[in-house]
Image (tube, rainbow, N blue to C red; front, side):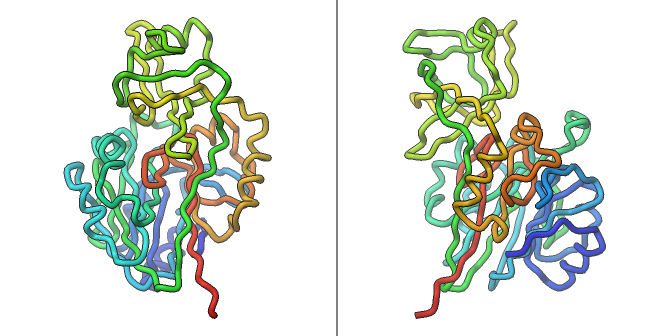
Length: 330
């Protein structure tokens, strides 16, 4: 696996070499790429070895040089079962879908229950736009094999690996549950009104405003041993409604996260758990904003800055990472 922030000319040359690629960058550059073995999604933000950067003249390209075969497509919102059906016997899947799309909401809610989802690594991210143009520009995904582009589909790249190769997929979550009261929801979804806080029925929006809750910190819950965040998108106190960037799960116990004192140190600690230089990672735009990561290194993690991350399921305010390693010869 090789990662590089490239000019359009260098990216075109890489595609011409028949490399298998996962590409991220501004829409106008992605639209200008020739057909080939790649999928892509829009973003204007990247983590580089020197730190976070906003670039409109570069594409972040990951080359899967371990791959022995690949196929790609854009799946519609009602065709998510194809994510499992088109897998190779040994390999992994990369996905990217637009922020605010029907497909994203469908995958967030229905994806975790897809039969066989967890049998093979699924890594990816949510395409976005420059923060100054949210509501003006539309997040897009691309299928390089056909030249298709979509504002509401899931671009998938299925990668086949040799039997000697193994895939590591995990997350670096800087957040842990705080010591505050438990929060549970009678119904799941992206939009909520009422919940139980410490067992007491409460309107969440009114609670947030009354307590002055810092909504740059997510809710955190234990999902089968992994700490998973649900981040706040909007708090509408007038109508008593809160919208999240990922759906809450009914009956799950959430707590507001503890404050992270030093993002840079926390990422450096996560980087020591593996070789960050040899993996693809994607980091949430909320971390980029709230931790002021522009120009600030994150322990060697490189990749696109995104509007959500996938490690099988949709994640928020998390760094997801994928690497390929080969078994040592006997």
